[in-house]
Length: 163
Ligand SMILES: [Zn+2]
Image 1: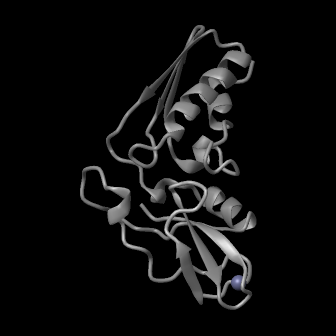
Image 2 (image 1 turned 60 degrees about the vertical axis):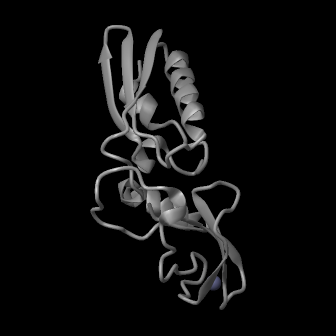
């Protein structure tokens, strides 16, 4: 039987399905004892509707792997930041033409409203690497991504906003 941790780590993020929950950095803890699994996750953006999907996907994946008693807990502190996206996660985003978030470093404790996060100064184009890119829309298909366009290759691309 695959370990509960391995199953949980392989579940894909509903909003950025090229990333696993492990790569996204939302997976905090997986505790396995006998048939019982307790998974702890920290949601990404405050009020993110994807959290319910994550919980359901985790429960489904673990149930299908043979774990009968699965509990998914949510822990809000410390708050998730885009800095928790792993290096392999950042590489995968780039490979899929999505600009990864810049590193933001430590921030004061407490929830950060999405609309108060200032846009980053420079977001290089994931296709050609040009720094000449413009934000077209603060929100694209999902609230966590902005839509930008490269002024060099003229291609639009999505950018995972720093948080
Ligand atoms: Zn470009």
